[in-house]
Image (cartoon, rainbow, N blue to C red; front, side):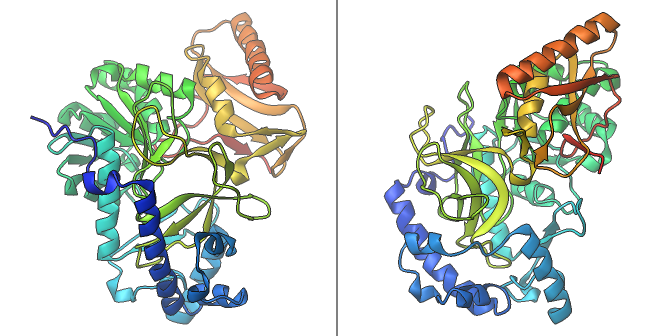
Length: 454
């Protein structure tokens, strides 16, 4: 009989909020001293610059008044500094001895050279634990076959997730997004997975290509559980509807983990409730600051701001007051599902937010509207920018793929409906160009929503 317990780690995941705060404070005091002592060229100067040492931080309020200490831009500078000082690219925020670093992954490096993230053996064990909590809440159990569709090459959800699935007793099939959609579907046909992990774009691409490659729809693959991460999708109603229906009613869960002891996953409520923080004793995820001033915001139900990460247990290159660029909405009130703790939803990237004559527009919200017109659209779209954001002169230029076999009058009627729907729901004026199905590039990795012509 399958294990019916609701949580992977019953003792830790059911702790009352008061006990969690106690643990967080104890670990935070220890971690502040650790990074101060072991990062003399990155973290220590940042404390010294504000005239504070770890012993001067005597409350969470003091901690939240500390300045932002890490961003992706600072990461790049720290990596250049460590290469010059120490001969490695892992950043001057590396606190563990290099010989104790046993795993490295990186960002995609799409805007330049990649950023590296490092693990000690302890860091890997914590990572395994946090992913196990996530997958367990999504219903994945030991002995089940799981098709792994994230990118394997140096990605946070690549080899670390394969390892974590195996560590909890599942059977990961490491197909990897780099292998392409035909190889992915071949593995699905041969191994008959009951669960799929990958990006929302991968799930949608499987729905689109399965009939032509395997000769039957994705609903016949036998996938009952899908856990997506890496991009908005599971929290967008029309995208969510398309994926769950395309896989024959599979249960869809959202996650957004990286390293550092993060753990979060959405629940099984019919209406998306955000992602539950499942490892609060390892990492603060849902701290919020103003995206512009970086001043701390009140942590109250419904609050919106840029997320800030602080890791309590990570040894190698720990995040501390790290503004990572996602805009979050925090929920502190109990969830209808009954699971304890805080939740959050990702509204979009801070640097992806567009300002269309005073109207704030997240590309993911546009994508959700376009998906609401499937099957008359394929769901694929691109926002076309002729100048750097965030300011955009209206109308906002958008390419949208129409479905195959539509007549010119049908395409024009669809275009007019899309303009009207975007104006009504998101309050901006769009100039939509309808394009042929299949003309916009697909990806098994993160879906592309913006086309830059500058």
